[in-house]
Image (tube, rainbow, N blue to C red; front, side):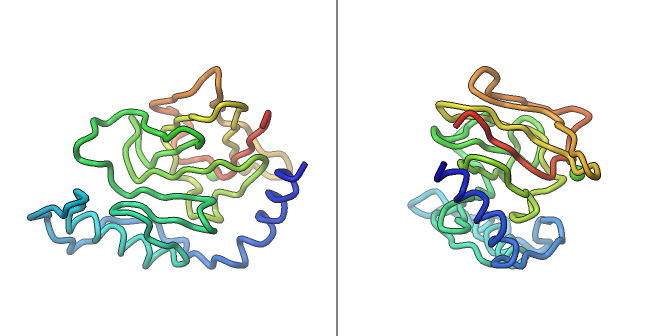
Length: 181
Ligand SMILES: [Ca+2]
């Protein structure tokens, strides 16, 4: 059960390693409108989003035009969709993704670990509105903090991979628990 042990260790260590602020992500008020694109398709607007997110959630490493890596790649946050890709469930194979807005609206976070994780570790609590499960095994439950016993809000897994709108459960999930992996 190495996965399980690793997850438990991460759950204990990460909150102390990453002193995230609790401020919610906001579009930088003065972000310059994109006037050009780089060879990788990145815009100045994309970089402004990266910079703003990093400012509010230190500890990440930029690994692409729109991507930040935390904890050595345990969590990847992607702040804007590639403009050449239509809005749709777009979680890469081997990950489960959660989106800030309905209909897979970015920013998008993705995790792959087994077991229980506190979304607050990544400043992703109370903000998920749609999900896409693109792993080959298992199920993930999204849980709301409700005292001594948490409440399962919704689940996604190999038999139910996408939820475009979690409805009345928008902006409630605090924890994820992935099983069957
Ligand atoms: Ca909550």
